[in-house]
Length: 222
View (cartoon, rainbow, N blue to C red):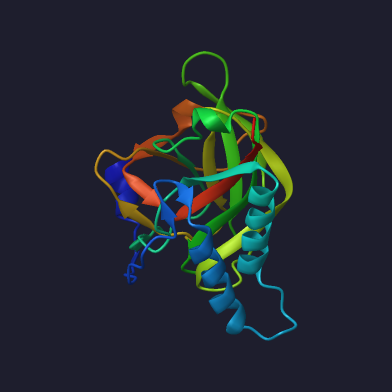
């Protein structure tokens, strides 16, 4: 499948690599707030700023003794390739939710958009013993990127997460979120819609493609 699917990659784009606002999976709040401020300055006053919304929400959570962390890429600008296949379900298998996330919830996500085509966030976990079947835990709404570049999205309803839960995205049209080929990386991809609540693992193929998105999760400090 890899050899035939890769022939469909019809667009190659490169982006300047900026320093990550996340260090070792931990949020660097001052840098996030600064990025939100700079983003807000470039917008008209009446328009809500998702980056500022996410930054404010993270600050409030941390002030309330809530643990906040992230799962996904460290740098959202690292993607250099856009897959133009349609109707793709993409599940991240290398970077899963850590033990500390048990009993927590996903409340926001961020991604790099190379187009204004729709995309949605998915959260899965393995059903039963082994890795033969995936259970859909929750999904965000289908969203249209507000801008080309980094997008910040707050989920209207939090999605429960736990240890070894997996994040994914669904792209009903051609590519939106770019990826970067990374040695020994494992991402599950299938061309087709995901099942509710269960999806058979056999329909997916593993690729070494790291997609440019990440999920913010929170948990009340114990």
